Length: 76
Image 1 (cartoon, rainbow, N blue to C red):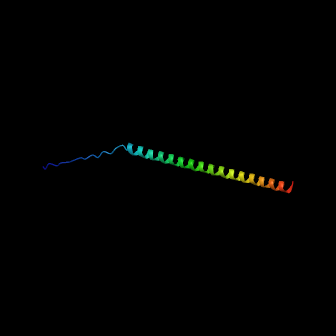
Image 2: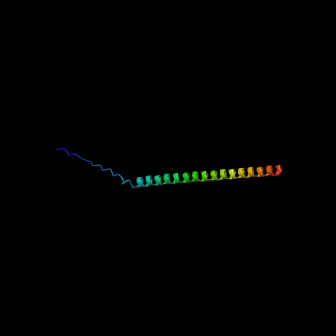
Image 3: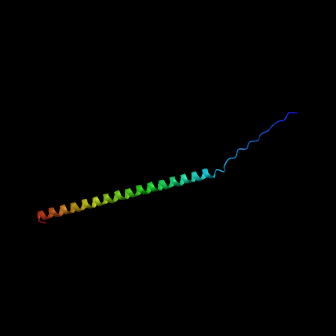
């Protein structure tokens, strides 16, 4: 009878904890990035609206001053 040699090779895989932690960190970073950019856009929009409202107020004041000067020149 011939001697047979049987080799058993076990391949051990990790539990994947490190992979899940990296994936979780990437998701958290993505969410924080989206929140940061959305708040920055909101802030810019609010600033633009404030400047537009101020310009409109200045325009209205200038119109009132122009009307008053015209009325004064006309003797009203």
